[in-house]
Length: 320
Image (cartoon, rainbow, N blue to C red; front, side):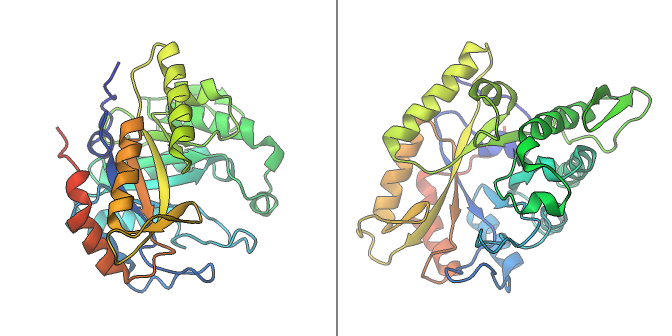
């Protein structure tokens, strides 16, 4: 089956079968040295990305500054920042890649996510993950070794919270059908995108997520992995689902500059970048979130160049 489910406007607009859209990762600035961005123009850059036609802005859930990790993301709490961005933008999808479920109670995740989705008119894309920074777990009195089960139970809890007067009982708590969560998501449910394996079996990931967030790889390797994931979806009798990945880029002035590897991406001219993205589209990647942390040119100018020279090849189509 070659269609995606209809969930909310952000999901329906960002993910189209056989097409690739482009988003950007916050903070929209260069900070190759050090873990802390300056965030001086953070809102202006997000508004610029929206005006230029990028499909989505992506945040991360980094609760504590772990020195060995070397990155603090956008710094602000993702749900607080999503609410702020929802009030200052109109069309761009608001994504998180990803909320670390074992470190947050799922009732709070479900309510915060549904609130953002309702207030923004269905612009939320909720990535979820089990977490990869062991240092954070003792700080929140959680067990890093138990994050697989904690993630799975949290996922189930969040799914149930979207139902009318939910009834369930698991490791995070129970509801007896008399209590309810308000608000409900904008549409039928929250779009939950699973990041990586999240300590789960491959079949579980394929069957339970509304999409998959994975990492950059060589094209042939990525093609095999995406094919295997979609084969598990089909084997479960489910409709096709979108796949997305991140990509660090450093856009060179010379449009014909060849690709040179950098951390989880490459430095290149626009033509090599376009060729790579077209290859990703051809193997079934539906969205790429570009990270400009290591980009050496001025961020605003780079966004303008990407919009003028690249977005026409990967347009964000209006939600049907």
